[in-house]
Length: 123
Image 1 (cartoon, helix red, strand yellow):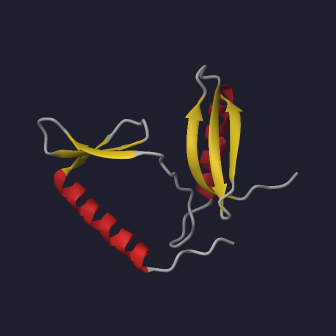
Image 2 (tube, rainbow, N blue to C red):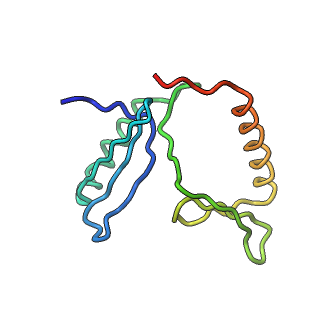
Protein backbone atom coordinates (compact mmCIF):
# COMPACT_ATOMS: atom_id res chain seq x y z
CA UNK A 1 0.00 0.00 0.00
CA UNK A 2 1.34 3.45 -0.96
CA UNK A 3 1.34 6.11 1.77
CA UNK A 4 -0.13 9.53 0.98
CA UNK A 5 1.86 12.16 2.91
CA UNK A 6 -0.69 14.86 3.67
CA UNK A 7 0.42 18.37 4.55
CA UNK A 8 -2.93 20.18 4.65
CA UNK A 9 -6.51 19.35 5.55
CA UNK A 10 -8.49 21.25 2.91
CA UNK A 11 -12.07 20.17 3.44
CA UNK A 12 -14.36 18.34 5.79
CA UNK A 13 -17.87 17.33 4.82
CA UNK A 14 -20.75 15.25 6.14
CA UNK A 15 -22.91 13.24 3.76
CA UNK A 16 -26.55 14.24 3.26
CA UNK A 17 -27.74 11.24 5.26
CA UNK A 18 -25.21 11.98 8.05
CA UNK A 19 -23.90 8.39 7.88
CA UNK A 20 -20.42 9.31 6.61
CA UNK A 21 -17.95 12.16 6.86
CA UNK A 22 -15.15 13.01 4.48
CA UNK A 23 -11.73 14.51 5.07
CA UNK A 24 -9.84 15.86 2.07
CA UNK A 25 -6.08 16.27 2.32
CA UNK A 26 -3.44 17.77 0.01
CA UNK A 27 0.24 16.83 -0.17
CA UNK A 28 3.25 19.04 -0.95
CA UNK A 29 2.78 18.40 -4.69
CA UNK A 30 -0.80 19.72 -4.62
CA UNK A 31 -2.34 16.26 -5.05
CA UNK A 32 -5.64 15.71 -3.21
CA UNK A 33 -6.85 12.61 -1.43
CA UNK A 34 -10.27 12.22 0.18
CA UNK A 35 -11.11 9.72 2.90
CA UNK A 36 -14.74 8.79 3.56
CA UNK A 37 -15.36 7.38 7.03
CA UNK A 38 -18.54 6.06 8.65
CA UNK A 39 -19.83 8.59 11.18
CA UNK A 40 -20.06 5.82 13.77
CA UNK A 41 -16.24 5.77 13.86
CA UNK A 42 -15.90 9.47 14.72
CA UNK A 43 -16.11 8.81 18.46
CA UNK A 44 -13.47 6.09 18.16
CA UNK A 45 -11.09 8.50 16.44
CA UNK A 46 -11.25 11.20 19.11
CA UNK A 47 -9.07 9.48 21.76
CA UNK A 48 -6.65 8.28 19.08
CA UNK A 49 -6.21 11.77 17.63
CA UNK A 50 -5.93 13.33 21.09
CA UNK A 51 -3.19 10.91 22.14
CA UNK A 52 -1.26 11.47 18.90
CA UNK A 53 -1.58 15.25 19.26
CA UNK A 54 -0.29 15.03 22.84
CA UNK A 55 2.82 13.11 21.67
CA UNK A 56 3.71 15.66 18.99
CA UNK A 57 4.38 19.01 20.63
CA UNK A 58 4.66 21.76 18.06
CA UNK A 59 8.07 23.32 17.83
CA UNK A 60 8.43 26.79 16.37
CA UNK A 61 8.61 26.70 12.61
CA UNK A 62 7.24 23.19 12.18
CA UNK A 63 4.49 22.52 9.71
CA UNK A 64 1.01 22.00 11.05
CA UNK A 65 -2.20 20.89 9.42
CA UNK A 66 -4.12 23.84 8.08
CA UNK A 67 -7.60 24.25 6.69
CA UNK A 68 -8.30 26.01 3.41
CA UNK A 69 -11.84 27.38 3.45
CA UNK A 70 -13.64 27.62 0.12
CA UNK A 71 -15.32 30.87 1.12
CA UNK A 72 -14.91 33.56 3.74
CA UNK A 73 -16.89 36.68 4.50
CA UNK A 74 -16.78 39.62 6.87
CA UNK A 75 -19.67 41.54 8.37
CA UNK A 76 -20.62 43.35 11.55
CA UNK A 77 -22.92 42.57 14.43
CA UNK A 78 -26.19 44.46 14.73
CA UNK A 79 -26.22 46.65 17.80
CA UNK A 80 -22.69 45.71 18.92
CA UNK A 81 -19.23 46.94 18.01
CA UNK A 82 -18.09 43.55 16.78
CA UNK A 83 -16.82 42.28 13.46
CA UNK A 84 -18.14 38.94 12.20
CA UNK A 85 -15.81 36.58 10.35
CA UNK A 86 -17.30 33.51 8.65
CA UNK A 87 -15.56 30.60 6.91
CA UNK A 88 -17.55 28.35 4.60
CA UNK A 89 -20.97 27.55 6.08
CA UNK A 90 -19.78 27.55 9.70
CA UNK A 91 -21.11 29.85 12.40
CA UNK A 92 -19.33 33.23 12.27
CA UNK A 93 -16.70 34.31 14.76
CA UNK A 94 -17.61 37.52 16.63
CA UNK A 95 -14.46 39.57 17.18
CA UNK A 96 -14.21 42.70 19.32
CA UNK A 97 -13.46 45.82 17.29
CA UNK A 98 -9.95 46.38 18.65
CA UNK A 99 -9.01 42.74 18.08
CA UNK A 100 -10.43 42.87 14.54
CA UNK A 101 -8.38 45.99 13.77
CA UNK A 102 -5.20 44.29 15.01
CA UNK A 103 -6.08 41.17 13.01
CA UNK A 104 -6.60 43.24 9.86
CA UNK A 105 -3.17 44.82 10.34
CA UNK A 106 -1.54 41.41 10.81
CA UNK A 107 -3.29 40.02 7.72
CA UNK A 108 -2.06 43.00 5.69
CA UNK A 109 1.52 42.58 6.97
CA UNK A 110 1.55 38.84 6.22
CA UNK A 111 0.00 39.36 2.77
CA UNK A 112 2.63 41.97 1.91
CA UNK A 113 5.43 39.71 3.12
CA UNK A 114 4.14 36.81 1.01
CA UNK A 115 3.72 39.00 -2.08
CA UNK A 116 7.24 40.37 -1.79
CA UNK A 117 8.87 36.97 -1.25
CA UNK A 118 9.61 34.18 -3.72
CA UNK A 119 6.99 31.51 -4.45
CA UNK A 120 7.59 28.35 -2.38
CA UNK A 121 8.99 25.41 -4.31
CA UNK A 122 6.82 22.32 -4.51
CA UNK A 123 8.90 19.19 -3.90
